[in-house]
Length: 111
Image (cartoon, rainbow, N blue to C red):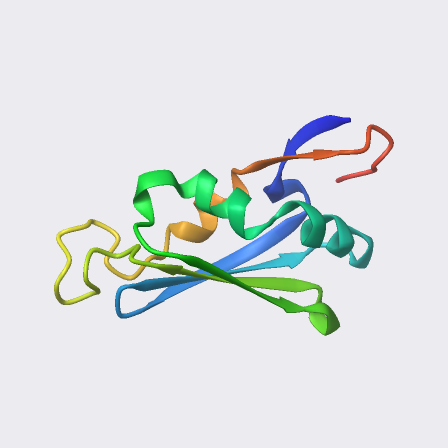
């Protein structure tokens, strides 16, 4: 097994809904989706963000498009108009998630 960043397997997009950041990751290839589904768990995402997310993390699977969507509750310090955080709309959460490392088989071919 080897560790690689998610950016080698997926692309992402994020935004906000009040105090909740929304982060979607989409597999770059269909064969990467099962690995993302197995490794990018609620627990792994919660651990990755640490104290940045004060509430729960929810995950939604969208197998038909090879994507996972995460809701990060309590991530935006009250939301766009209330927060003192620099990233009031949660736009950098996707970049941060793509920096998360997961273990993959040594023989997995990635671009």
